[in-house]
Image (cartoon, rainbow, N blue to C red; front, side):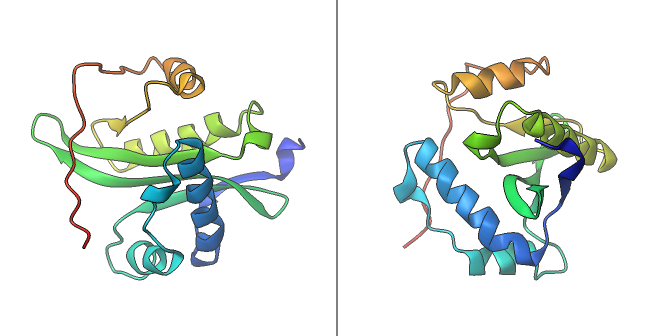
Length: 155
């Protein structure tokens, strides 16, 4: 890979279809493709078409192709204040182990610091050893005590 042609940047509306495809690939990897009910149209409206967008997104672009993405949003911790939540983080398999994930992760970390967030928070599946090893390189705290809870509000 020619690293001089790699660009980590904020996503633009014209990137939404490529980002959505990466979301679908991530869902396949995480063995839950049936869980994706979002759409590129909804992402455009909620992430690019509002005064205050619901999420932020960065992409890794290599020679004009979007090969990775990070999606985040702000959340509030009663104990820590404003936090940045990393919802999804993905690099196409054929581009892994080239430092792209690290550059993207550092972009998100820098963004969180710029926004004066107290911490960056995310989830990782317990079986996803490559991701766990990646996060451990950053001296991340992976908390085994908390269980994730959710209730679907979709019809």
